[in-house]
Structure formats: structure tokens, C-alpha cells
Length: 249
Image (tube, rainbow, N blue to C red; front, side, top):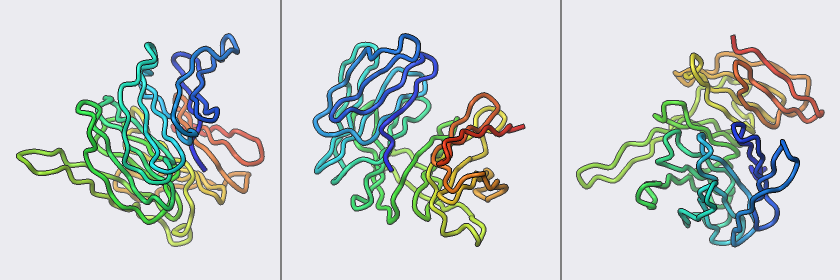
């Protein structure tokens, strides 16, 4: 499972992978209107929250992570740190960092500095990561995947000491501890401390700021593939072709 598509709501466009190319498609004119060329097949795409940048991760040996300015089309950064492919990407809210996770046999999560163009830190992970999301404040981010839901905290480098990335696992109830979490979103606004995630067994789960599993809902589906936040609702895409909306209030 790779994130080869992303949606920019403010500009009403969709970015999707087409081989070694990222294509922007307008949902207003129903036309492709911009293209970004990669070096290898694209396996992950994400927009920055303000729509200023778009990043793409490649699949294949020694893949690149490419970051373009959306308006000008200029390539701003090209990062190399993964071995076999990039599974997912996420910008920090202030656009100063980009987090990337590799394919299963790559086993790396990396944080890139978008001011210096350098890698801040990398960390070995044992389980496949399927999705990443930053909290609204940018203080931490969450990753999810195979038997994996973890909160990550990055210390800033200072006085010659390198940055340290510390991962803390979520506290998952025993009956769900072997779950595969397919997608994750951090809350916004009054719900900024919450984390919402979906599982391969058709659950929508809510975690608190203390990393505790607070609530879960069994959806009318075998698998809940994807999740997003729409105003005061959580939208969940299911394997039976339905999209379910849940009121956060």
C-alpha cells in the first residue's frame, strides 16, 4: 500500500502518479494542467498544508525524494536516504521539515530539513509504515502500519549535538494489539490532541494525547482503507465502496 495520490482542497486539484511523473488534475475543469517529472516510478505524493510545495517519493533502488514549488514548477530539493522505495511522506505544518518512510525492506524513517536541504535524522523501524501525519502544532508526528502506531518526538540540534528522534508506541487494547493500521490523521482545532486511524479489520479508532486508545467503531466493512478530516467530521473510505462520515462533536 503506497500513497501515490493526494488532494489539495484549496486549489481544487488532485495530484496522482503516472509512472515516473506526478500529474495535477483540476476537479473544476476536469483537465490535467501541470506535470512534474521524476527519475523513477512514483510511489508516494503529498502536498504541504498551504499548497506551496508538492513532494514525491520514488520506488526502486536508491530512490529520490523530490520537492517542487507548485506554482513555478521549480525543483527545490532532491533527497536520497532510502534504499528500495518510499512508502509515504508528510510535511510539517510550517514547511520546515519533511518526514519520509521507506518500504518494508528499507526499514527507515527519515526527517529532512527544508531550510538547509540536509537530513536531520534517520531511525530504523521494524514494521512497514503506511501513513504519516503531523500534529497541528508541529510538535510531533504519528506513523501507522503493520502492528504499528507510534508517536515521534524530534529534539532540535544545538551546540554540536545532533537531533534525536524518539518513538513512543501507542497504548493499544489487547484485542487490537496485532492490528494493521492503514491510515492516520491528527486532529485539528479543538480536537488537535486526538489521533484518528483505520485498520485492516474495519475499525475507526481514536487515540488521546496520552497515546491511549479511547474509542473505536466497527465499520460496516472488512477493511477501512483511508481516512481524512473534513470540517468537523472524519471521513473513512471502506473496501465495500462506501465513504462514511462521523461527527467529531
